Length: 319
Image (tube, rainbow, N blue to C red; front, side, top):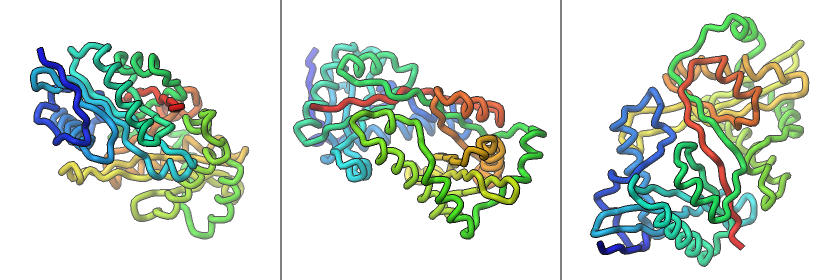
């Protein structure tokens, strides 16, 4: 059998990408059919065959066995002052781990030669082959994240009563929310990464929060949590539009919550309100939490019926 390794940048996407094994983060999502998810996976994989991507395609007798690529991430690179990229990979179920390991090694070598120093990857908890290959190539696990998604909401009397303390964000709340954000810290893959400045990592999430506020009423929804007439917490959620895949679907996603010490109990009511409103406006909502944040995971699981996927967040610094 003739085996060839070819650079993605010089190739057009082959026709046999459907034969690769994908671990789509949407694969248990109630809002998408199996056919929709497969089509999106193939489209995302085909998008890797572009000049701006560093990577390779392994083919045997003209059939694609595996694809591996590092996609530059300009915003993160500018933010942290470090050339950064995201690793993506897909392979046939029958592809040997050694083949995938060689492909990862070649891809990292090419990314390093192009100036990329920091490579991250999200690997589904069921994709043991890729997880073991990346760990074997020096990747470190920085987080274990679970994404919950639903199209329904539990009627919970305790949260229903607490909704009286949750209202839409107003421009007059800016100073109070800014004071909350100034003191907020976030425990994520960025803040655990010793190659990134902790202050810039926390500021990254404050920027994300301010962006949600800036797009409030357009592509995001933001609410505040009050106690004794004071704003003690704030939560927001964005959206992703799937029209680029040819699907008339919008999904609420990318939520954040920050609070003062006396606003800790507001996460549940805020999440309940954001979920309720998201289901009314979009019909679909998802929330991602770090599993070491047991409180957040418990609240999400208690607020609504969920399906979920779990993924490791990994990183390697290329010396």
